[in-house]
Image (tube, rainbow, N blue to C red):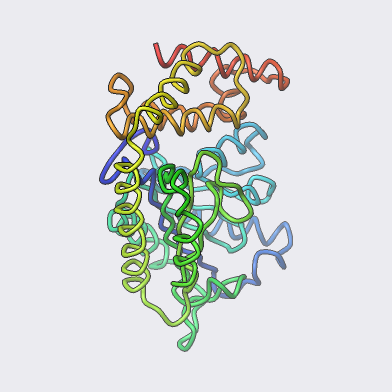
Length: 329
């Protein structure tokens, strides 16, 4: 799966996502649709996708643990996980995921590890064009694509980059930098988007404006900001590369390799330190790919899927520690 891989600038950038919001012409927006109309939307999209390349899965056919594990893998939104009248279209490696009947009729997403907007965008355009050749999307000559939320009207495109910024946080300059970034029409959120916290110093950077701008302009603006953040984070890492930092990283590594109980938030913070140590070549025996995997697998629902069992909170924390110890052997 794409989220277990590394790519360009993976020392700082965890992943890239590009998303299109689209609605089918002739239908009301999703929140105004009846249950039967939502089913019609699913059927319309099902008819036009290439079944050899994509699989359609209805949310009503998935259990709660499976749905929320997809949230933990950043593939669907929390809002969609609560929706039993939706469906997802996925390709073989989950690098293309389209949510049907989320806030819009279609939220089409393309993912890549590291910093790779163009590859995401090209894959997204290929799928979207396949659908748009057969289904007319709601579009206005003056405003562009019409969406349920006014902030998505126009290009209907959101570019989101997930970054690991522990060094900027450590030297105390991160709040000022993020404030400056926000003034450039870029939003800064936690790892699960709007209203989520930046646990483990993981942040999502994305464009705010979609009206009156082209796809290329959005990509250029986000790219400039992300490249600046990458450079600033690397400079900050050189500044904090001290014995004290190495001690912190090795302590985190020691806990992860030996703990018998690990809470989810604690595990994420420790993995964040280990990720920094690996990226800076302080810890050489653990690969970034392994840490990427653990950042996903140690979430509550993913863990339950791995063990094929439901846990209470106490047992979950024990199983998380068991899993991490085994993976770091």
